[in-house]
Image (cartoon, rainbow, N blue to C red):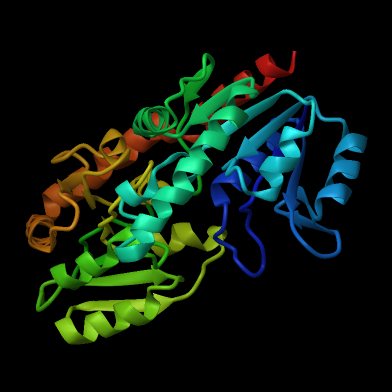
Length: 364
């Protein structure tokens, strides 16, 4: 089967963490014996790149269209079909059967999901109403729609006021051969928590900083890039929090080793459709303290794989962290159960097999 992948986000040398969930799929399709090409519509001269064996073309719409026609794919896998994005507009002009993957903001009223504050929140409502109207029309022409969590499907269908007759829930895949326990958490020294997140308001990292104010029995390391970096550094200093910010982007190949160096994972998000990084941390055997938002409770069971707290509540987050680090043996057992759960729900073998079955059915 020839599979074309359209995406706005994909790993690159400038942004190695972008769209790793798309690349993981594309590489798995190729490993299963299918011919795969990834297309990104971007201004400037056409450039080909190889990312872990996957061919990626970044070019303006017409060069992409020309190469796409020569490739003559059997099916188009479309990720994050934001209606104003160039790759979404080009896909609408192609006759190839297509499957759309809905990952998050493109199918939400983002003002209601913690993405914006103040005036930007009000302005986003006007933008999102038009976005959702256009997306509903675009999805109606797709052969199938995939959502990465049950919550994402419910939220999208409510926002769009549209239910596609052929839809499926398939989580983002986790390579559980690479993301695997390498050491027992809470085995030495002061426990360290990790928050590997984009530095954006929706991630709730300001709440995590407040939770660690004056907390001396453990510390949090925040790793990521984004517009909230300066504010987070200032907040850490003002709150005298036992938190440290490392502003850097990591190639995905380095993430399993990084996660395994920590004892637990922290997800203080205001909104999340699945939280792939959380699932990868669970696959590495880390217990998790996370907010009860979006699709997170589908993958993290409170008291079994870690603890769930309400979003925007630093005191609750703090209590859960203290509880976790004060019971190391229970925390290690939570990590073991977290690993088993992700292996059952999100392993690449299970999820990609379902995706390939769907793509094959659509291409006939």
